[in-house]
Length: 381
Figure 1 (cartoon, rainbow, N blue to C red):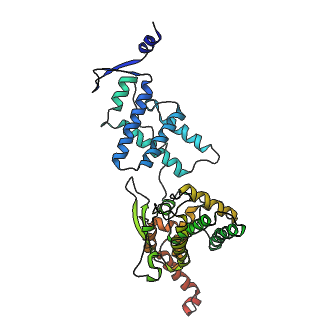
Figure 2 (figure 1 turned 60 degrees about the horizontal axis):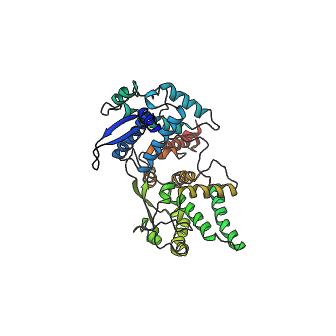
Figure 3 (figure 1 turned 45 degrees about the vertical axis):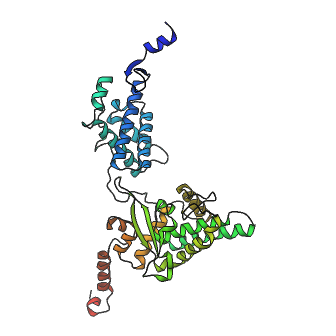
């Protein structure tokens, strides 16, 4: 027997009608791998049909591939014990994976297994016919992390203090001056980064929201004519919910942050044109005349923070936390703050502040009045 005959004899042969030929011979060298790839392809189509973004779909399918590789088994051999062993391995890492990260992993596995075990699809029948077994749901309430809290970040994550904000922005501005004094290149980029972070803080933006801003997203507020075309920032790439499209909102400039608004105007009208980026509308552009990446934002923030000698637990998102907290401290109503930052629920806004709601403040004010009141009633207590 020739090598070719042996190859054909040891593989599965399937005859398929083709438009340009009567028959074609297809050899399935690894039917298990082919079945797994087909499952992922079908799950991808289902996710797109649900309206999930391409990035989310790629992230989900990529994780399932890594999960399969870590287990060394295909889905029709997975068991609940595999989830527990996988979770234990992540918790034994240094540092261990966060609760929110594990919950996200468990949710992805759960969703994939739901797809495989759904009777509206035929994966169970196909696997039983081919391998004598079929996939089952391996994630249950007793071996997965639940979403018990609206805020799952590590306790060390916190907003900036006023002194820390001043130190951070002072260091960002000083970098620009140092580059100019040394006669080196990069002063314009350093100016851009400094103003970008000031804008994130002054409008309470998330990373993606800031990176995806275009010039057209800067608008006027007729009630604040002193800021001309910089009284409103229109966010078009807000955080989506349950696979929906990005949410939009308009963030109004407030007078407490007018110093950042003036800097934004200087960037748009004087500094940005020097990049000669006529073919892009991106607000924040790189030296290559392309939109700044989120990775760049994280990298530059960490560099400035470290040079300023600040707590390493402060992240770019801490600027947004600071915005919420400081607006509350300035006396803005909680409902206004909620609309500014795009929270669906007031309870989420309250998490970022030291003040949960007006009711608690009224109760405290009443108690202070009773205890420290100079009236005879207060003195007799």
